Every structure is written in structure tokens, then in C-alpha cells.
Length: 507
Image 1 (cartoon, one colour):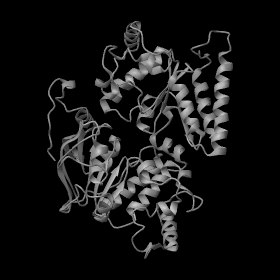
Image 2 (cartoon, rainbow, N blue to C red):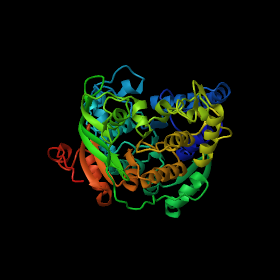
Image 3 (cartoon, rainbow, N blue to C red):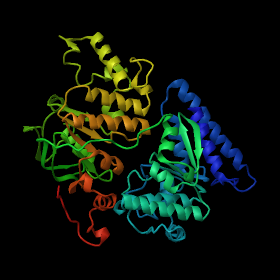
Image 4 (cartoon, one colour):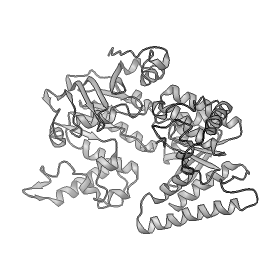
């Protein structure tokens, strides 16, 4: 952990380019660098405590909090989850959201407008935050950073929740910021974007910086090899096969959240044997609730879901599983694993009561251990022992444990939600191969992902979700990023694009 922190702060300092950062309470000649040094020393001390006491996540939480709150003005962190007050006007919440001053002043509106014009951000200071699309909310976070006079912006997976069109607009904003003297640390696993926007590329692996390159001298393949330490196959190889009968049928599924707001609005589709149906869409448009509804974890208000004719609308997770459904959940830590359990126990979650693991009222420990050893080898889980608690594994190896458990039995349907989120390119390559193997074996696959490249490369058909509805379905071979991006934002004739939303489901 300490090595990783040194790497992070090396990156910060390397991007300063000799300029000294300012702190909100500092003036020139009053020990700004001493204050930064104290902040770094505190972070490193926490790293030691985290390692000694097993306080997972302490350092990342503290460092992220320092950067988000603007305690070090030189750098501002803008992460995947945006911290904005939903029911405030943008200018009203500016200082409040910084956590420094109770509430914004009206003069802040003029400052926001001036910053917006200067950097081409097109932010309306009088807009209600809750009414802004995700791409515009991200611009608000950038305005917050610039309002604090940040010299360095740390953008962590900034395009993960954006449509392709919003990503393009973000890249234009980034170039405007750079042209006006700002520095940007762009953290992403999307290699195409790295080569597109970076002036200099640094590759970290295992907390260490293992490579540096210029975009003109690098390729996706060379960067992937540096990231993983071996050659990686970046393209998904799959043969076109004829789909069979419908395995999953969903008809007019509707549901509301705990506040009574609709999250699923008449969702209908089917997934056939031997095909991958990809659900594309910006995160937060009902995909999470759809997957939970199909796996017995979310109650629907109306509609029906069937697996080979068997109604699963009100079924429990165990009943769904026993119909031959494998589930790779969106949140592997919360919904896919028991972190304190060893690998071998996590490998039998959901099947511990069946032979060969159940022997009457007891569990056959030898059978459990044999299963774990076999799956660790088959699915290349990197671990010193099957007795290792899964909390000690990397994110990629945690995901491999789940995939191994879910795909090691005969299945009719695989429901995979964000299966490669937060994984390195080597783990992504592995997971993709396993999904295609199940598809080729005749299973139906429902793939939900916010990664449009993943959806396009793995799917046979693609459906786009927007505000709880399936707006558009298309054969993957005929799909384009531009068209899918438009539907992810509400459709080509959405009010944002000059008209009313139009539903179209040709496939």
C-alpha cells in the first residue's frame, strides 16, 4: 500500500511541472510545501496502520476525501460517483458541496458563469442539479475544481457513465483545460481513450510504475502487455451461431423503488439459447433493478418473467438458481462473496446443500476442498491457498472466484451484470472467453454492461435501456457506436436532440 501511495504522489508531483501548488489557507512564503508534506506523511502513516490492523480502504478513503474537499487545492479528484446536491441550484451548492462554507453566495453564480465561459464548459449556474444529465453533472464537478483554483484535475474513469457523445464532449473540455495551463491525470482502463487524449502515458501494476510511453510510440497491445506483464488478446473471437429456442422471456415488467419512482417501465425481451443479448445503457437506467428482479432479489409490481415457460416472477434466488440460472452480480463484494470466508467456502455458496457437498445434515469438507482446488486451477485464481479469505484477493481474482462458482455447473442461462468492472485487461480477457464458451455450449446469456465496447464485442443482439425502458434492439453486427450512443441518451428524436423520445425495436 505504501508503494502505491508513493506512486500516486509521484504522479501528482510529476504533473506539477515545477509549479508550486497553493492551499486554501496559504499564502506565498508561509510553508505550503510543509503543509503538503504533513498531508502526505499522514497518508503514509495511515498506510502503515491499515496494513498492521487490517483496516481495508482507510487510506484511499482519507486521500480521496482530502482531494474532494479541496484541502489540497493543487489537485482536485473527480471520481465515478459524483458528489452533488440533487435539490440545489448549481451556484447555491457550490461551497456547500466543497464542505468548507455552509452555503453558496449569490456572487458564486457569476463566478460559475465566468469559469464556464473561460473553459468552454457550458454550465448554467441556475440549473437544478437533479435535472442535469450525467455528462453535465461531471462538468459541474470540473467547475467546482476550477472554482477552488485547482491546477491538477484527477479524472478517475470519467467516461464510465457517459454516452459516446458525452465522452467526446468531455475530451474537448479536457483539451481546453490543457490549452489554458491546467494539468490532467486521466485514470482509465480504456486503451483507445488513453491513446486518443494523453500527451504522456504512465502504466502502474501492483502499485508500481512499470512503464512510460508517448501515444505515438504506443499501441493498445503494447500498453496491455505492460499492464498485465504478458501478451493479451484484445479482440473477442466468436463464431456466428444460429440461436435456439427462447430460454428467458420477459413481458411488460414494471417496478418502483422505495420512494415510489418507476425504475422498470414495461420491459419486454427474450434471450434465446446460444446467443448473448447485451443490455447497453448509462448506469442508473434500470439495469440494476432488472437483473435483481430476474434473480429473485427485487419485487416487481407487474409483468412476468419465465425461464423455459416456468414463471420466476416471484421466485426466490434459490428457486431461480435451481432452474439452471447462473448469476454474476454487479457488486461482487456485496452480493457475490462473503469476504471473511475462505475461497473454498465461497466456491460452494448456493450449492452447499446439494451433493456432492452435502452428506445428510453435514458438509463433506473433502469434496469442498477438491472442488476448490480444481476450480482455482481451471479458472486461474491467483492465491497462495484455497483457505485464503477472499477479502485478501485482488478484484480480478475475486471475480474469478464468482465466475468459477457460477459456471462450474450445467446452466441454461447466464445473467452477467458488469462482469469486468474494475478489472485489468488480463482478467477482462479471461472473463470474456468464459462467457463466449457458455454461449457456444448452448446457454443463453444476458449481459448487462456500461462498457459499450464490451457490449458490442460480446453480444449477438443489443438492447438499449433508458429510464427503465427498452428503447431499441438491434443485431450486433449492424450496430454502430454513434447510433447506440444516441439511444443511450434517449433516442435520436429525444428532446435533447430536438424532438420527442421514439421507441424502436427492430430486432
